Image (cartoon, rainbow, N blue to C red; front, top):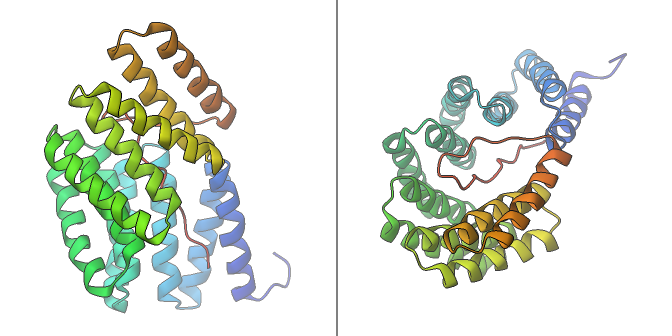
Length: 263
């Protein structure tokens, strides 16, 4: 990139990669992060190496290449552990757990999240704590242990509400709705899913909106309200087509999209 200083070029590549990631242009995103990683290695910037390995893992995760994602996350974790950067370790453990969920390796996902929960509580990171609690709830949904799923999702929601973390409030509410649906408590499930939908719409989180709509479609199908089921599914389909995304759904209710980190 011309005569840019390496540090400036690294910042530019990370920012550009984040933009490409947000619009699902994963090939260009990968190129930015990969070049950024090469520069971070040249600069011997271990922290940025770990962050970029995390970001590269998330690119592969979104393309359903879970084994490669895990490889990148584990490389990033090794560096974060060497740096004693517990916050970065926690972020990487969250992503690693997601990859294991997609692979159906729930015991490994539980191990990631249970270890991380101890960590985030020790360092006092309520934002990450709410994410981990909701993630644990999601694992238990996949394992069909709905009592534990409900408990962890409620804990995650409570923490998110205390700190005003709206994104995680929405995901906690959504996951409670999904859990209640599987417990055949359809009226309460509908209330939670509709509330999550309104929050995501307010925040203009289009991909998350489509995921809640898909869950509502499933709910209305279970309730034999076919016209609402079809309506929600059609709305979800329009959004996913607009965004050009397809995410494999291990529980038939999709996972939150992992964020990527800039400088």
